Image 1 (cartoon, helix red, strand yellow):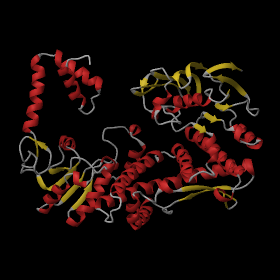
Image 2 (tube, each protein chain N blue to C red; image 1 turned 180 degrees about the horizontal axis):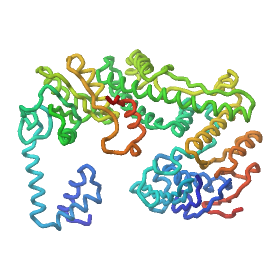
Image 3 (cartoon, rainbow over the protein chains, first blue to last red; image 1 turned 60 degrees about the horizontal axis):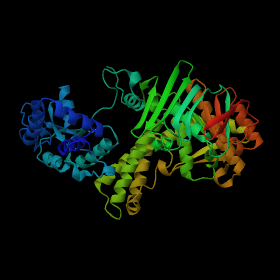
Image 4 (cartoon, rainbow over the protein chains, first blue to last red; image 1 turned 180 degrees about the vertical axis):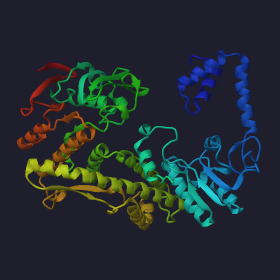
Length: 199
Length: 360
């Protein structure tokens, strides 16, 4: 190896990160070594602090630095509507829209037998026990509209039907603000299927 | 659409080659293993952005080179496109007009006619070979077919992985049930789209067949699920069928019915060619299907397409050679052969060990 042991170790650790290949890992490592001392230390401290203070919310499963999280402990939100999503970043995306006032449930994944992910690896038991406590009027199944997300929604639908809450699924269609010509065939077909009468 | 020029470097047995093809028939003549099919593969790569021969594309890199580079100038009615493909140990890079692109941006993607000698054998081959043949045609003539098909296969692979893991269990879990529903949902879409595509294709195949053999050919879709008018009624049917055999599927660890188990058959005057057809009839049926595919691709694109024929003429008798040659008139065609094809008037390229030794 061309580098000192500690540098190699840094490169190896960076390589484990998603989306980072050997070349990028090497570039990042060399950058961190040549950058001002305090910059590298701030990064290390930020990682350490985030890891130490961030936990999963014991209610919804989202990342939070206080338990329960800000959304779950917000009394102004509608606690009778649950939005079930795959990942914490889905919560962030829906929150950015600013138009959802209910609460969330993060599954931390979707069914994917090819990758050995079954319902026992998702936070489904937790969802059921939240629903058992009562007071829930609607569950929005907001898993992604891909193969794994659709199957997860089908699974949850069967599982939740006996609970007797209203179940809904996010609508499929054209992205707002985009032009039709750039949408793929499947999206357009879904949008035509789900078209609405103008009243 | 026409290929104006093509350049290969470090591709299969080609060290470096520049070619300005003729606008009509291009006959690629050479002995076995001289690189005729390799050249056809390179042309297909430049038109479609992927190989028709292998999924492990790094195997096209010539031994001793670190990368394979292909470039072509493709002329279309409206505009020209310069396509380039570069394959190295780090993967594949596609560009169109010097901008990074995907295979969907390539001018001949789902719109190039490829005809290979093994296609002629599908009449006597396995249902899987016939499905591949027809799925390939449908992908080009029916928008949305390919993505629906891919979605089904992905769902099916998930379900099969789950069935394999639970193999031998006799309790059907809710997880299996969810994937069963997903397979029924995505599979019935494929089933209905196949019928739709076939209703477009079949009349054209019938007329192409009639022109060669003077008999009435039809194509039947043999569905393992059954046939229905709409996706929703088919889904119900598919689902009840799957629910009935779920336990058996758990025993053997795979999904036993669905579009991946279906078949297509050519029928001439009421006879199923799979069982009651001569070799000649089966080959004529495949040829008719290929010619119909070409005609429909041209209609859909409102442009002539490029034809790539790999050693097909030697497999046909004079009457069918003549029928094929007349269908190729006015098109840019690349035909590989071990000896000149008298029916084709055009330009010949003699290939020897990856170089052009003669032309004219």
